[in-house]
Image (cartoon, rainbow, N blue to C red; front, side, top):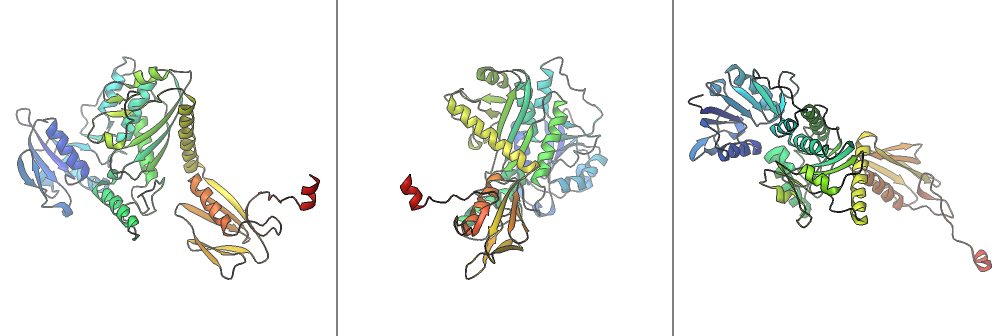
Length: 433
């Protein structure tokens, strides 16, 4: 440090997070005398700038951290875990934005917005900061938003329960995630094969609660990270929400649908007043509802509270709550639907990723199993379809039933387990009526 000016290093400077970090430091006029931009071998030599000075991205070597006061790790988790000891050995303070150090009990997880919120009430003071700390993890932004909003909502009244559906943007996977979403969108419209290197699943024009098995990190792992950071930040001062994280086909900005059940009735105006304040902008009834496009470039959390207590608004709110509850049940218990096949020689078997049906046609019917669903067959005539998505399970079961709908007279076909087939009244019965 020279005359209150700091020397900085940004590891992962070529990533979206690294570029945004550099822009924020410049906009806030962070007192720095030198900023080194470092990244992996794929990004070496890329032209960039610090202030008005052109520079190049350099490789990560131990000598790069000499006399550096703060090192920001904005790279992926594995790269940060490999190189952060170099910065520490050189005496640099480590600020981890990659979550590589989140499981180290010696490294605190910090969120200044939440810490300031706790300080508003003298009885809710966080533990004193450890001045000897040489590393710090920046909390996940979704955990920060939820902690801030629920701490404030608690001032309007006691909270009984909270259900949250959070929609993850592609930008959380960096430039590669955004490029894959773009390519999937173009390829779907041109009927070409979808790239799956990042998500291992279709995310364009779709919302998924799980990535493919080859995608890292898994969506469930990110969900657990958000909840773990939330618990750390709030220190038990706010109820832990039931959270479902969904990958949305958007490029930027997290979006949240939050259902809060209070112990006692609270007026909508009072809740909105409690939420509003520093870092949070509550939309007025006459304003447009917040969206991810409006949030781009904003430094505030944009919030819309249910506008009134009309039947329509209550119905919409109930629908959102039911969808969120189904999403929670889907990832904890799962959904299933049973089908039965009736008919001489009628049968089904699972072959690879498809179900083969022999149901009275001149040829077997091969029906592919959608990703995220599983099919179990008992004695070739009883099918059980299981999955986390209630709609997908029900739709797939309905599609299978439509291959050979049950005949109410001959009893042949595919029916739901326990389904009662209605027969039409005969002519004689109809005449007497």
